[in-house]
Length: 209
Image (cartoon, rainbow, N blue to C red; front, side):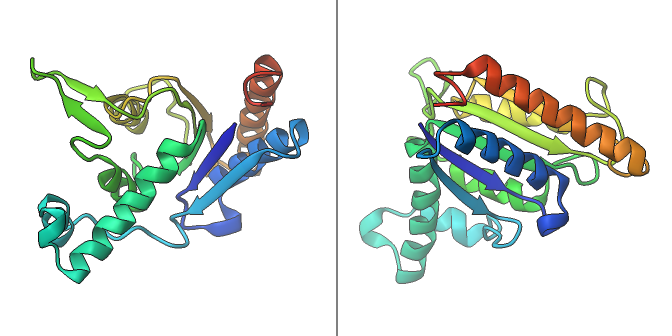
């Protein structure tokens, strides 16, 4: 299986969501040293914001695009291609002010393209085209909100990923990161235990593949 890992924290190695992603990657590599893993860190190298120029480039016919528009589309194409080529996708997403980082929203905006990653049926029903993916969303937040109305990010991501066709999605959260060292350690430990359980449950055909 080919694994794509998207990191989105601005904190680099101090990021708890990255820590969870690193833990999952280590488990995958331990199970299969030959595993193919690609990592894109959009926290360190952000995707440009989806602005008017971006929308204009994507909606301009290929033979009429300017050089700058071609560059914009090539970036979006490359993001879509690596997503389509992956069997397993890991999104490491910290919670900033009750929702996902702006960097990750820009990434999703570049992915959501009519006729490429989703389409509308003749009945007007949206159909996601990014199908057959095993998806893990690893989150970290300062407080504790999992399963409550304060967790506004999980419902959004579940809807957005589902819109693109990704319906096999597992969310794992490390909570209490801003509630002191003991709470933070407990939150990370519990999240890592959930990752370990998934590895064991999925072997030999899932995470271990």
